Image 1 (spheres, helix red, strand yellow):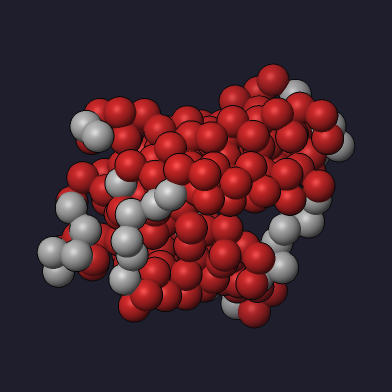
Image 2 (tube, rainbow, N blue to C red; image 1 turned 90 degrees about the vertical axis):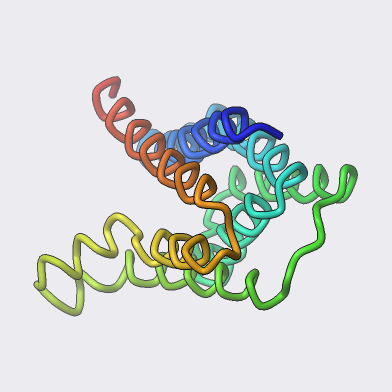
Length: 175
């Protein structure tokens, strides 16, 4: 799969993920949160099915969220079920357990840090670091620098994050 198509899938996934969360968390709109969640599941699953590096990320993120007890709505469960069903039907590339665990623990670190760090410290750097979930970004960058991931996956992941942030901004402007 070309990295341009993969980048588009990462962008769609990031945008749909955040929009789904905000629709549910802020507006309480389960119907549209579920629709955007399903769109996120489809974009994430297609990327994971066709690219092993994307599979690491799109499998690690939901596992990290589950471990951090952040799966807090039916829209999350629906999204997760659709994602898993698509992976089971179409399969995923073979993955290294060590690399997957690195990504899972980084995603978990992001989620736990995002929720807790501001309650523990007023340190501006640490608060921004965890507010924007830099643990997984650094892990992906290090995996790319070490040759485990292609550097384009890091670029795609940054695009995912930019789309996630743009969804948050557009949601705030529309509501």
